[in-house]
Length: 364
Ligand code: PEP
Ligand code: MN
Image (cartoon, rainbow, N blue to C red):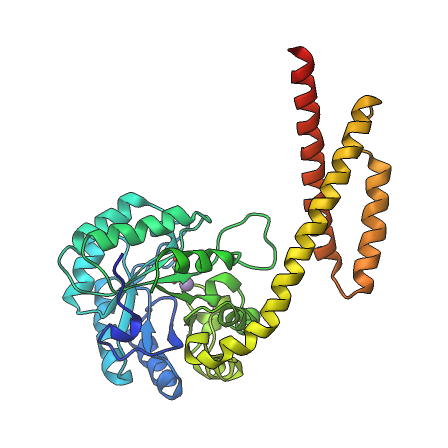
């Protein structure tokens, strides 16, 4: 897939892209107020939803086409390009007519290949950047598929937005982040930038700063933060929006680190440590392999004496003593549990396979 870097979109966008603006464009006064407030911020791209995908009818569904005019005024006032969400061909047509600079596809749309195809068809032959939010469910293939559909239609100025995934059991976040997903996406589509949308991950403004820092730590390329001059009275997503002043405080609190490409000299320095890590990893593997060999002997013994593979008392003992020992060495309880479960599961599987093999030999 041929991807044009954000910095080459011709819009003056730079590293550590900051996208800000309200969840929805509500009125000309609201857009005016917010864009004025953002003048002293680091915002590079101004966002607002003009067609809002609402879970149930009757909520504020956006002002549609007339709001595109307010966005054009904000672009002039603020001196930065503008972006809106599109969910079908008609939205694309109207956004293009209003010369919106960047389009984005929302999570409720990227989940539907028919909609993504419809948008791609409407964009055939148009040179406009498109950002694609992750689908509501954590399906990497679906997310990838959206980029492929757009790319086939000739769109190569693309970026992804990680806005978290719906999870009914999740309590802390509105949409659970899955940091391995953007990393995988970046590896699969080289050159693709991934922006984090901490607002829709958080659902409440208090944790936006910490999620933003997390995103940067995972090497994400920018942030999209919902910003409103009067968040509590916003017509959508009131709890998660921040004022332009708070946006500045959040942004100033963030630590941006350089990538390795910017410091080639660091590689040889780090290699000294990494050589040691490689050695320790190979020793760890040797030890694990040795452990599984012994497990095999135990398996044989259990078979000969017709004993159950899973021995709950022994397992309980192993868990307790190893977790305690691990914690004394500054390893967390959670890590120890995960590690022990993984080893135990593999051991049980190996013993089951042994049992199966012996049975099939006996039955021949
Ligand atoms: C939005 O950005 O306001 C929005 C609707 O987001 P999402 O598609 O991530 O739910
Ligand atoms: Mn929103």
